Image 1 (tube, rainbow, N blue to C red):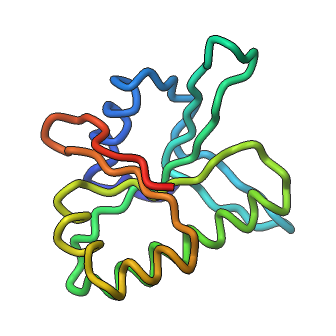
Image 2: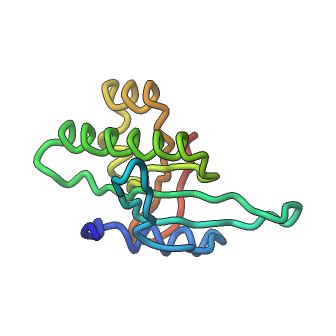
Length: 138
């Protein structure tokens, strides 16, 4: 199993505080004999539905030496996971989980905005200190 990101627990706790049930951590996606692991799988039951919304969240800290390098890796990983979900017709929405500080400092830049928009990356933004969800960006 891959190592957990520094903000993994903060994202997990934020989801629980928001009413999400954590289904599993290190959710396995398989395709053609290859396996990848998404950090968190969660479900939120909606009263009017028998089955609620299900999400997968890949948590990223963006604390490497280069934001652009971290962005390349994160978006590449996100696109691979999304493609597997589409091919296997699994009923999950995929999000990239990041902190509010990283979002404000780096994701407001034109290059990051363009990459996120063109690749249709959904973002889950959390306040890492208070462990709450700040924003969902679809």
